[in-house]
Length: 268
Ligand code: 1GP
Image (cartoon, rainbow, N blue to C red; front, top):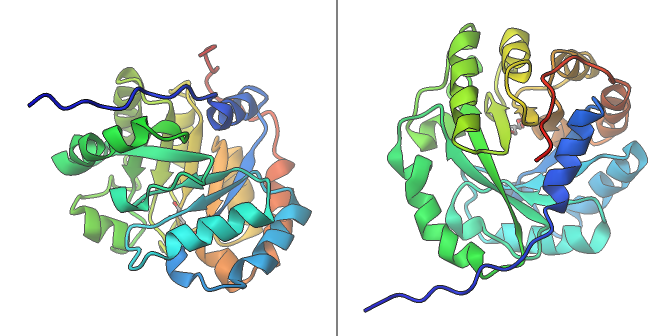
């Protein structure tokens, strides 16, 4: 029997354009990562308040080991509290949520696990096709952060060594040639070390698409250094969970980074 899919809805690509414009303008941005496993009613109010003061650019919501259904309650509450774009950072297809503004459609291009390169995508595509949710084709590149993290364990894939910028560079280039619109360099939540500045520099100066960097960024100095190396967006989770007041200082430091040299973005 022939399977009929819903017609693909028209989407405006607003969030992707926001990433691209900031990279073109060489203006660094910051995302607050919300782990739905930490969510309980009332948890978000203070974080959102700090994010508004700091003019945070995005909220990312999700994780590789989300145990319950809290992600949907969490996104619902977040959308009621803020107009900052909410992007799902899904660990699995059951984290797809139509209330969010966009979703990273992640291909784990540093790994060789077919399920995370194409398998989950085949399962999710028909669901996403009928939704009014912006889909962001994203190359997800895991980099060794000094200790095994949930994402490296769950994805059953080896991260790229933190001192091998050429491997990261070739991986990101291949992702770009495959048509991916964003690159996400991640050393995993709670990593001992963030992605090395050499890797960030080599990737950001090679690809034309926006580069997002997360994992193990804990201090204002680290945030600044990562942006100066060429990260277009930094993502911070754990450090803000422990100290939501840090959001304001870190956002200010990130927004003060302009004009870092990186490859020119094509007019896509
Ligand atoms: C998001 O993994 C990062 O990509 C978040 O890491 O929780 O260590 O900030 P932290």
